[in-house]
Image (cartoon, rainbow, N blue to C red; front, side, top):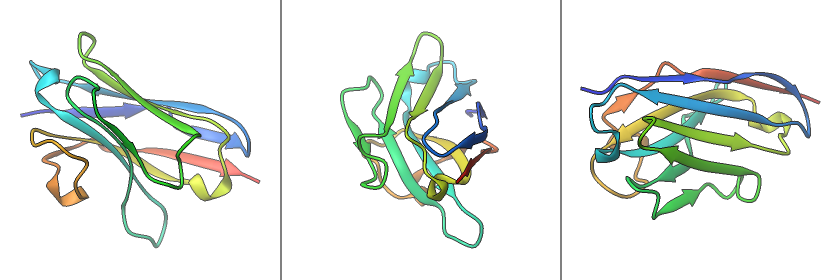
Length: 123
């Protein structure tokens, strides 16, 4: 069983930056591939970024490429999402998720989810 806790969300002006963190309770965090997803009001949850167990594979949604950076620290059992040049359309609840099978996959492929952290970008 893995518990995930996100932090770092908040209100920021367009063009600003935020860094989201995901703390995991897993005994061996390196056993899990990690994804970040987001869900805006009235919209479906969408994929944002993915990082494999040891960081050798990273994927981003086209909408965040060049602006967001995903990373992880297995020793600290954390994953992070650095978000730069934020836009109002980035406003959403951001979720950290984990799974053992490789590949970014779909949200339904992830076994463990955090409670989410709100990111609001004002114009």
